[in-house]
Image 1 (tube, rainbow, N blue to C red):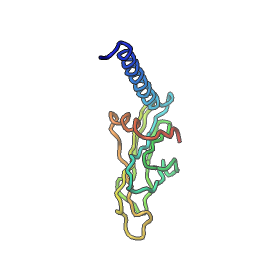
Image 2: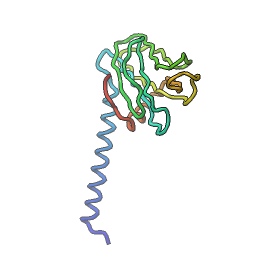
Image 3: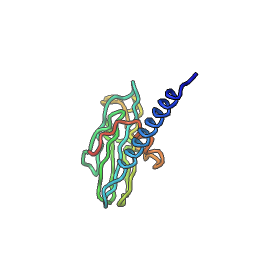
Image 4: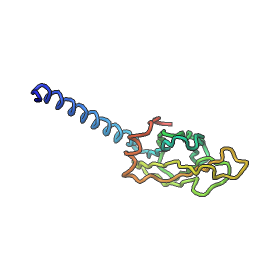
Length: 152
């Protein structure tokens, strides 16, 4: 037999868990909003245990802005304009760059993906890295399970 105290305790625990989930979702939503007049670009890399542990550098208009470590996400707030984002590879690879025309208030996510042991012999690392645009409706899902490193 379940007592009223047991039901109240369970109800309170469920309510607390729902509040924590709502707070986490709100934090993710707020983290996606750039400052007024700026655009925000998220860089994401899924955690793939046992796969390509190298963390390649990412560049914006030829300037280094961070590294793409597994399981991490970071963002860069930028003024509106056209940007060429690129991930470093040993040799030039198609799809290792992404060009974006950014407007104020825009938020995009760019995922770093990898093809293991794809690069030619003599390359170090032998992995090839690529950039792909994350669908806007998927961005919050990525951010919820990656380590958010914040602004870079």
